[in-house]
Length: 458
DNA sequence: TCTGGGGTCCTAGGACCC
DNA sequence: TCTGGGGTCCTAGGACCC
Image 1 (spheres, rainbow, N blue to C red):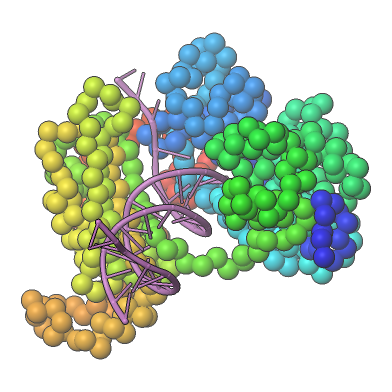
Image 2 (image 1 turned 60 degrees about the vertical axis):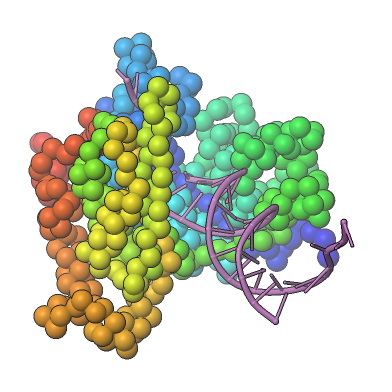
């Protein structure tokens, strides 16, 4: 049975939607600062390093995704460009609200990233395009976040539809105006569909990045239609199984399942570039203590335990004149644990192994690896008992108690704000850190901090 | 002067085993 | 001089995504 390139033809294929907040971080900021509407706005990455979200007006100025901020700064004077430091607490909270609204429109939802989710309309009767228009309006009315929706029988087609919906809205003339905001590829006839495929560059397809895109174009595959018409087995031979799946999905054959209960993470990372170069081991230790603590919170949130801690430090590859050094090490733990103190202890042991004085460090990070469920790790530990850790005395808390302590620790920080309780080695909350981030343009945490609530005036 | 952070999956190649 | 073959596991690196 061959599905062929006609994505709309299979009546038994499911209909999936992809909902995506437009320029999400910028839109979140505009909700609380309406004066930013209509202006070119960018949101900057940690450290105010580069642009990670751009309003349509900023895109029109030619600012690229990931473009370094120092390259855009002249546009502040010239074009009234506004730059804001990323405020992830705000975006995360707005995301939760958006996902809750979207979820109410379909039986199943997969939250794919902070601003995107897939919906599965399996079993839902009626006009799905209209249903998605209603959802879109509700999200806009309740939250103030504009979004676009793409529908199709596979995730890859839904994502492509979403791209078309956004582009049709942003660039009049690129696609037919009826496709703007909500685009349902499954509702189109073959001719219409192929015309859309032909009008869309192959690089827009989900799963075709810069490398593979260039290779495809080299081989004369320049549009989505060219790719859809390729033979999947040939694609596998010349490229990979990954791209083969992409081609099949474009042909209307689902290969990527909807994942409404995502598996626990296999690795948990926390890393940062520093606001200024760091030279002292003591500052690196302080930074790594905090990174490890943050990663440990995420680890406990998924009821996991880590079997090893991977630590890395490096100088800046952009500073060509500086002597370069980068190193990393994986420190195995005697027993898998979620205890912050043990994880920090191992991370610092790793740091001592790889730290070399005399370099200007630009970035460091911690990755918790060999993750496993906490019960498994716990059972093993209790079975072995205190005899395993020869240096332990009976007055030391048992592993189970440490996990309880850490859980309480997390609850306090959740309620009173991150950093209310922390290990002494992390350097204190209010102290100016030698390794801290630059964040000169951060807006208030309007929805997640009592101290920063917006004030409404009569 | 100034260039993010956090993930996933796949593959190739080496180590090791019998 | 001559130097197997097949399997598994692990790791590093590449490609992608947002």
